[in-house]
Amino acid sequence: MSNSSLARAPAVAEPGGSEFAYDRVELTDDDFRQAAALVGQLTGIVIKEHKREMIHSRLSRRLRALGLQSYKAYLEFVQSDAGKNEIGEFINVVTTNLTSFFREDHHFQDLKNKVLAQIAAEGRSRVRIWSSACSSGEEPYSIAMTVRESDAAQAKDLKILATDLDTNILARASAGVYAQDRVTAIPEKMLRASTKQVGDKFEFTSEVKRMITFRQLNLLTRWPFSGPFDVIFCRNVLIYFDADTKREVVNRMAQMLRPNGTLYLGHSESLLGEHALLSSEGKTIYRRRA
Ligand SMILES: C[S@@+](CC[C@H](N)C(=O)[O-])C[C@H]1O[C@@H](n2cnc3c(N)ncnc32)[C@H](O)[C@@H]1O
Image (tube, rainbow, N blue to C red; front, side, top):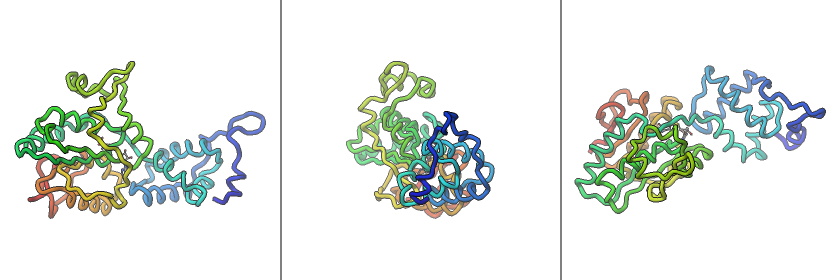
């Protein structure tokens, strides 16, 4: 969008005091196609027709925030030089961040009983764990709590890297503060050992926070690290990608695992068929062949 059309964009409140009805602005077929293509290009997330209402309502927040009155104007703006800073906001509104503590608990059982037990038995000091689509932090904090309960916590150089594309959700993750109804899946003893209560909320202690480094990372771009990782969590994000993107991300992760390293995928993301580097170790658990 040119500066002149931005300048023409009306203010939020119209003359006469009545607020513009952002929720009634039509998302045309063309707007939807363009928005879906842009989401795919920026994030790898495939937006199909059944997500149209979701896109409509989420983008309407950006229309309202910017005081724009059509999706066409918004899509022009976000793709223009003047709209460069809007790209992050566009991405933030289209991501789906659903998560919870100890989601798919069998992964944390495997982490504790097999992976961390093995690391402790070998007395290894360098341990690297990557939560690659960490959302609001429940996944990396669940990893940290599991580590703290295991003998692998003795490892001198144990680090958890937690990354996500969405900057808003990452800010929440690094704050590490959760409402009562979010922490119910954490066993009471663990909760007491890893958090302090602040009013009616729970905040992870600095000791736990120090175990985790939060960074923004788009899985589609170059990854600014080379591993090797002992464990990679890549859960409930591949489902949003097309088959080629999914395959490429899994291949890159497999190459970043150390021999016998573990990859956890989400419940509906199992690898179909044989993988040259990964062997299946049960439900959505894969280990890198030695
Ligand atoms: C449904 S959440 C999954 C959270 C957690 N892994 C779990 O299983 O509970 C999906 C996350 O993937 C992130 N995401 C989507 N596309 C991404 C991309 N291209 N690169 C990195 N993260 C992405 C979203 O921002 C969102 O926080």
